[in-house]
Image 1 (cartoon, rainbow over the protein chains, first blue to last red):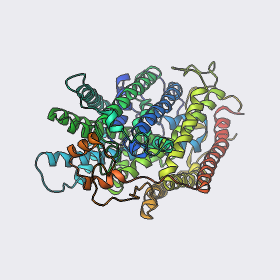
Image 2 (cartoon, chains in turn blue, yellow):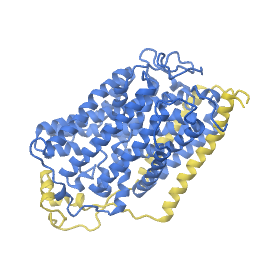
Image 3 (cartoon, each protein chain N blue to C red):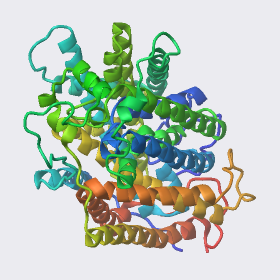
Image 4 (tube, each protein chain N blue to C red):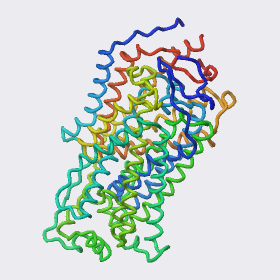
Length: 478
Length: 125
């Protein structure tokens, strides 16, 4: 691997391991925002409401804000590290430079599975939406959702294959529409524009905390869904024109957008829908903002939120394909996975083999597993990744103190965000354990097995010193 | 440290590695499902015969919302009364904690060994 400065603003991304060309540097801060918010905003349109089912409406609000703190820590930590580790693979590449190859391999898999499962969840929701539209337009039978699921995944994979600029510009537009739809629904149903239909006090009466405080803890599990994926902005690092500026700006603007969207979403839905219906994402509110719009009595809002939900699922699936493929590509490029995946398309300059390979994986999960299980698989992978981040930033600051590497962004109050993040991850592990302990153990068992496979087999194919590609000095203590 | 030259991996071996990863991945999600150990199922502890909105614990505003959504007390019965069971054993909790700690210990330990090789080769002793 050549020693190149991949933070350069004048050259394209790396093209090592025999690759003749690298990824194109064409993205700006707005694309970074669109990538982060685009992936996550679907969490406001579906999935977060399982947290209402786990503990009631108040529990979901508490989870929303604590998860907001967790992700603010994630965004701050990520912004500092990634403003210096500007390479495809995001946290995978960070781990490779700061902790070590096996940690990096695990982090790479967390990223791929979190995003691929989220992509599958999005496709399931899109299929559901098409069935609702069919019913609304007079179709009386049971619509087969599978062709729509396949269509969504393959169309977006094709878009990703053709180029990153068009992909993320598409995301920017549809994410802006989806975000605007939430604002318009809030204004229209809260009484600010026209008559309000919310009635929080009456709907909460007698159901304030139906499971007590243990329900608040349990709600943290799906509370992550409000924001899961914002850390994906780092995957664009090798394709933005100015990583040190664009990545922190896009990421921090993204988490602020999501904090607003999440709180508004909770406020609108919990004020319109009874908690038992809202909290059941399978037999109740599959797409709660859409359900809220249906109760508004306005067909314009129903269509707006219908398109908002569809756009949010498409934007998220689109961003997930982008991020999962970059992580898979980066691991292939380093030979952590077969080097065949580390190729860049000679014309479109995209990691096309990684994009194509992950399509059937997403389809297997989208067509074969229930929505809550797919979401849980995604959340668990994300949670393992967030647990890595405090360790990452603590070691980063220890090995390269502030005066040794110029950062594009230095997060304040270190190590408080790292400690807060680790604590909240511990709480969320317990929340997952309360309902999905078997999946948690199965998933960690999976990571232990693949870790042993990597350490004792796969790592022999990796070139040792060439993994370290950043123009950094030798870490302290080595 | 002497420069390490990795062996060249054949195409069949690369394909085999990919198959191993895919099989393990699918197994991690689907085995708990196939064994009906996926958890998180809700159940109705005390069903109500001939339910009314009042018997289901719904006030007038809540009942009105359910009716607007197309439910009757009969069709909303399971949706309203089903609850999760959050009881757990200390043994199961301790097992989970041990598994998580063991996992991170394992990867941090092996990573450190590998990382020292990387730094040694990149920067020299």
